[in-house]
Length: 166
Image (tube, rainbow, N blue to C red; front, side, top):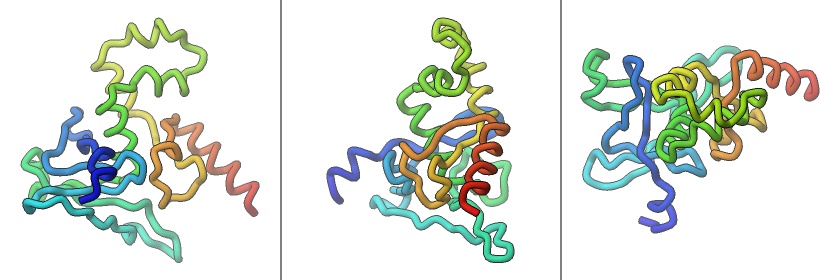
């Protein structure tokens, strides 16, 4: 296993039952957004799927199915997650970057006010945000290509992209 890859792997975090959890034996590469598993005793890269929600040549966002006892209330302990969302959330939670991310979105709020927000409220805000691909390429999961945004801003960004590419 390449040491450079190992240094860039961080734990996968997901939102389940209104709480963020680290999912044991799963890791995300913070630059590429690839998911790795150590479930079978060795570290291996998992291949994402893109066929869910396919209609008339359009592909859904790449996703992956994680298996962990934390999902016991779901069928066979599985949860399907979107790669871009898992990468962004895992990075923010692993490095505790709530305030930095919120400052990019809520530019009219002073940093001191953002610092005063309790962690539980920060997590609620994070749950309500969408992840936008800056270059609008659903397959580009580089962390620098992903940004948190409101649903309204995400929709606006996509409409502007469509308008400028047609």
